[in-house]
Length: 281
Ligand code: GLU
Image (tube, rainbow, N blue to C red; front, side):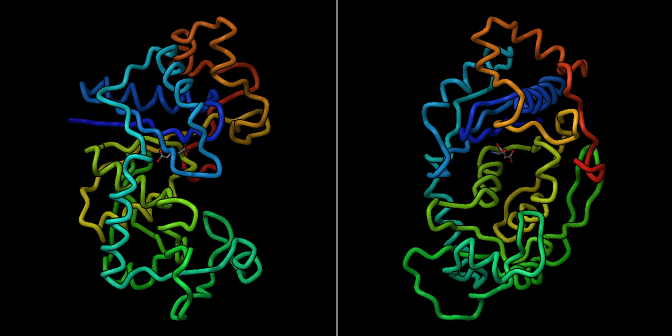
């Protein structure tokens, strides 16, 4: 049975791009007689806003998108992230790092999919564990896992290339886990078989596939859908022109009609569907 999910971070009001992502995930599940889950990714202490959760649920109802089962909150799963972190530490694959963002920026000479590539400053060093972040020793991890492949429903078979991320942070100083670790563990815990999300997260899947191998997690299929973009080709962002779903809802717009329009590829003026992976989204 197919199980998809919509996994918004309540860091800002949802916009049209979120509605599109939710419609895609919902419809893929429904078309296959499967299930559609809702997971709130609320573990970023600096950005996550509990007051936005009710609005997310109301927006989905307004769009006519019913989810199956209880809403999952990452904030209730932190024990599983810590346990996975311990397993990776026991495998000798994590090391503590005290570098700040500014340190990484200053020391980095290359950039990766998430920004400046970490040059391995703390690898092999003795650093204080107090408040440290824990990074994956990518070379060791990739060697231990061996060659890995994954499948995207739109882009086809992929050879996993997690090395392009360098030594990613998996356990953060200020949060229970990084997005990579939390999302991968949750998709496995929730039995998600088709990870549906925007093409902007395509590269992240290389890391997620590696984590699945290291932690013996089941391997789903992915569906990275094109993003909605504004006239200048930039993805819709919360702080840019696109009105929030809550604003549209409160203004009396018909949410189901909006969902149908997104399904049919009819987008509001100035908004279009960008290319898929590898087409500049
Ligand atoms: N929480 C992420 C976001 O809102 C999505 C993560 C995912 O779908 O894997 O962008």
